[in-house]
Amino acid sequence: MSTVTAIVDLDIEGPTISRHLYGHFAEHLGRCIYGGFWVGEDSTIPNEGGIRLDVVQALRALNIPNLRWPGGCFADEYHWKDGIGPRDQRPRMVNTHWGDVEENNHFGTHEFMALCELLGTEPYISGNVGSGTVQEMSEWVEYLTRDGDSPMARLRRANGRDEPWRVKFWGIGNETWGCGGNMRAEYSADLARQYATYCRDHGDNKLYRIASGATGDDYKWTRTLMEQINCFGCEATPRTFFQGISVHHYTMSGTWEAKGSATDFDTDDYYRTMASAQRIDRILTGHSTVMDIYDPGRRVGLVLDEWGTWWDVEPGTNPGFLFQQNTLRDALVASTHFDIFHKHAARLYMANIAQTVNVLQAMLLTDGDALCLTPTYHVFEMNKGHQDATSLAVHLRTQDARRRVGDAELDTLSASASIKDGAVLISVSNLDAEEPVEVTLDLRGGAVGEPTARLLTADRLQVHNSPESPEAVVPRPFDGVKPTGQGLVLTLPPHSFVTVQAPVARAH
Ligand code: AHR
Image 1 (cartoon, protein in one colour):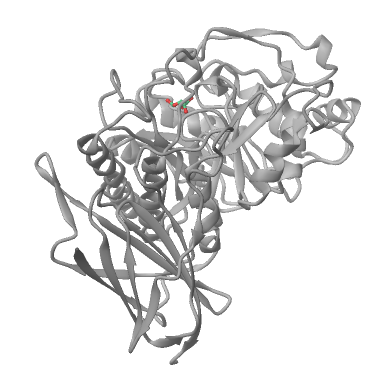
Image 2 (tube, helix red, strand yellow):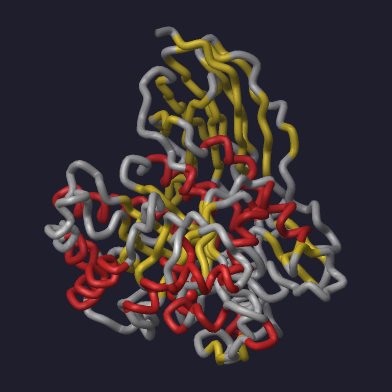
């Protein structure tokens, strides 16, 4: 058994962990919207105005801070005016990116805003740069957020909504280097400035404009955007053109051509997956370093608005629907990402897992009227106390909690901590597939009271939940946390995730 000491100074506060690091993403892709969130008012599945209530109820328990919509790649062929007005009169289109299926536009702007209200979450709208116009995007902002009398406010009222909504987060294009228009960074940066100019702050609705950013370690793309952030025409209200820039990173054990099976994998595949997940640390460091050069005052946030595992689709399902199972391995990918996100809290403002229901690394899987919570769901739930908490640095001292993956070393112990409302929350993952690990939490600068802990694990990494077996991977109370002279000690089983919460009396 390996041993690790994790040193945490309870009285040395790091930056706040933005709650938006726990954001979500819902695209018109496969069964995410249709069948996942939306069943229509005539469905026998319990719904409110067409929105599935079992899905809403399950997600409310996660305190979802924001929901990104309508894409992804779909956003750059979506024309929002097709999705308003009487549903039976809405134009149809072909969803060319995802399965080449017909889109009836029954889930549009009003339905999305109703969903956000039911979830108690902030909308994050991703606008169309690839095949849209500046006018179209500008009018969408006006339609949603303008009070008083104006053409778009009148159109909104004619469609049954008097009051403007509040919409802060606005994406200016998506993956403009690829499905969003195959642009060069320079051209994309110019377009982002142009679109940002006409995405107006109406009344006191202040937009947080997110420019379409890099994939993975393309730091040149970030540099090109950052060279363009300063708005010299904005002296009246000094601000940058964009308030955030995005980056995407997906985790897989194989390649884009052969990503690997979601459930049929061996230990080597597993370690390769965890190494791919941990790359996000280097990627965030790289983009933050570039941003620091142009924006040392951190006015612009880094927004990882797509992350998560991407496996080969489940056999027999539409390859364009990206439906995949979700095992304990996916849960550990998520817990590791969160530890890294917390470490980057000073610059990383938002992150959105792809995607919430039935697509890629989902929280929820539906099958007709059945619903099950995935292992990843449980990580989001166990970690939700970190939202808006003050981060605490965790220093790991270990000789042997490592595995070799190809030429690289994988750290098999991952941890992070935060403090909020007089209690510390510590998240610890043992990524070793076979060995338990003893972790000594050396907690300095304060005294901790009675801890409560929960454990997420299973006999095998491949275990997953299904409607027939919904509780194969669920968190259980963990009584293996013992006080020491200065902190706590716990032994984590192989491939497990533990959260420990305890009241704190600080020394200072
Ligand atoms: O999340 C699935 C797709 O991945 C998104 O539509 C796109 O932005 C990315 O390539």
